[in-house]
Image (cartoon, rainbow, N blue to C red):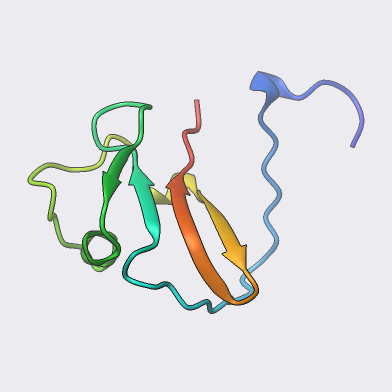
Length: 86
């Protein structure tokens, strides 16, 4: 890549590869529920959001398709944090 990147944001679409990880029920999860400060939720609540539910009583501040940061230890997810995209 060369040159300037608008808004200091550069997204690479890696394609449609499917990755599968184990997510224990006690993994740390934050989503953007009420602004850019993350709101802690449970893995069960995240699963409901992913499946179209609304366990928070209101929509997320940004949709999950903004992306997430996932911290992995071997094949197990330890934390999921929603990415803010300006």
